[in-house]
Image 1 (spheres, chains in turn orange, brown):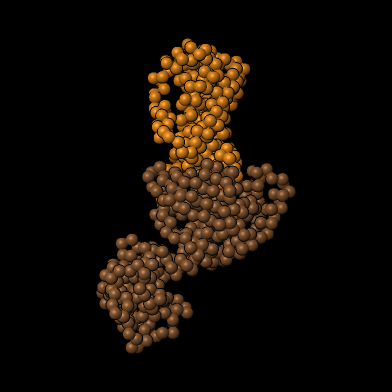
Image 2: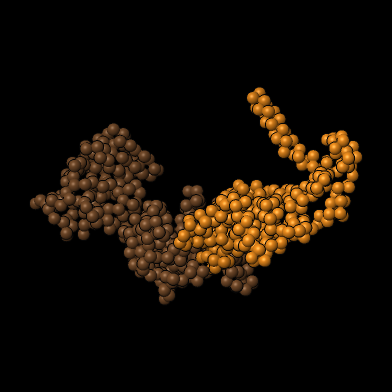
Length: 274
Length: 360
């Protein structure tokens, strides 16, 4: 009796939660498919008429491919770099014995504590001096400073959970440190690497402040910046903004769905059996 | 195959814990040496130092004719079986077995041959293509053993390899290990906390305590002539009985007088009258005295544990100290009964009260 009652309540609660979190996305899809006029005159949860005008405008008039490409390049490169370099750093911190380890971890953490807004101006001056304003490296480098600590911290956790016996077995078996890392530790850390990579990618994909500050024109603007700049002096093209939002969310959603099991595995790691 | 030499090895961990104090020991070529001791005694550290997974703070390590103190584990040509088995979970049994050979760039057909041989010897053939997660504990243990075997190394290091098996399998595998050592004749260094395992497997047994080597000797010598009170108490089950008291010299020879008992003892050469000593006697050596036998110890039976052919009898001496005896099960004893026990002169061990060292 109580079992049924609580289950019913839990189901209802879950349902509400799903509706509440999915509704904005649903509304964005509906609105992006409704004619502009209908959006303001008689908005409806169920579109009376489906048009692809907004998407057409997005890609034909605005050439939305450019910001998508920019975002993919910047987020992709940052993620790749973070995971590769981050896994070396994390392995070293998790496994090797060396002086000042705690200090290094502290520094890495400290970097993430600066409010972004407080370092935008100095970073701008720095990047300008290096001639990197409005370039891909001009975004990737600042992103790395924020994404790398996150990556390293997450991966240190994953590597620590892997049994030390495994790599010692590899060492005694005749593997070098490098071979033990590549052939034994890395394959076991894949769930962790996937989780970390996805989190880093999402972070870079959504980043707005740096992308806005360090780009000058549409050639290098990323998706969030491009969307923010859709609004003209006299009108806000809601239909196109929401179409762009759908387009921008889709790859991330696809990525997360594709790696869902890996992420869950990664977040609950430690179940690696020796 | 090789002789392994630990030359005054000292190991202090960064946190200040001393795991090995002046460990000086040579393991002969082809020998089966067992390190035994309670947890934290430094036995695993000793093994890891031989493997090269730990570097000694002081002292040298030699394998064969080579000083390997500063040589990485990779270059030492030894194989190790871990307590956790440490099988590579993402590889099949075949890949696990061949990992150490492939990484040394051995030709594929030779790898194949060695894996087949080891798999046949250990009965692993039907499961070569399975992953470790699909194996039982006993099978995993065999894979771990096989991974060491295929290497044909200079020496095998085994770190409590049987401790995760159930009792029956443990005894079977123990016998198998002994056979394996006989067949291969390769030096084996084995770590365990189980004195029975140490006694049954070792050519020689090295007893460690707090990082200090207490005694290294063949099992029976360890049992018959423990070098100190700790070894006496650690080796043998049920554990040796100990009584504190002093040595007295009389006209009919030496006597030991404690709070609870007074018995005749053989005079050790270095004994002096009135010296404080600890008397040790093993439970199987304690006998039930025949009526009228002169020197006996009166005790009251407290607990009886029958173990098949024998019974373990816990009895209370007049001052409430306990004495344990292993007696034939035919003796008709019951709890609460008064018995007279005899401690045979030849079975008595004497240790210095302070140092715990054996009186010679």
